[in-house]
Length: 343
Image (cartoon, rainbow, N blue to C red; front, side, top):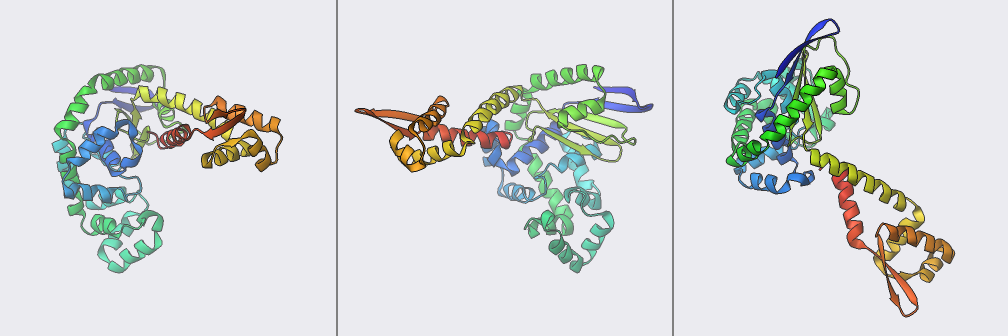
């Protein structure tokens, strides 16, 4: 729902919209890096299994892009196609090659340099040699993007057509209520706050204000990962924000639990106790001798580790033996990975 308002004495357009094309790009980003998306793993694996070999190869190339396909949001912003997949494909095919390359190289190569690279093989080799942080070892990717741009576009269009499968359509339709609720929530926030305030909130950081910006676009997303993305050009900014409310609650609880557990094992003595107990069960006396600590000190550390179920104990006659709760430790490590990778 477009809303016009005044900000800094200049007319600012605000667009708050559900976008199927944005969700398709978000899915492509997930498919290009399937390791860190546990919340939708089964659906993603099934979607991936239905792709053609050429599309899985395309995903392999996309995974080598600086942001694994997040770059395509800037193209959506430029062409302003939010729901018509067929029209999106047509626009991508006709998109100016130089601008297309500029976006997919993260804006790190200026237009003049791109023209030189395309016209001169030696310039291309210099690009490969001098920009390793962008190149990332994928000569094949940049040869295709720079020297065979049309082929890259056609492969991208084919990938989009395969992603927009009955599986995607069913999922997108099932989420319709969630999208609508997110729109209403954003509408209410826009009545109370400026768009730059909401942009800061979504991005969880201060977004630089720019007097030339004429439009802010807010798009709710189920598939987006990480949980917020900003795309921008000279006159507009596009923000995608996560609508997975249940994940926000889970992340908060997981974060609290992880914080407490990490505080416990951050102590070097308790960390060493866990390491020793992973190898074999030990009594308090054995731990005391190995770590050269008093029995009372060992008991204190044991009690703290046991309070988080990180160790278990068994009794043999009059002696207690402690073992590492490997399942709980593995769960801690898994939750830490999930938390950091925004699952």
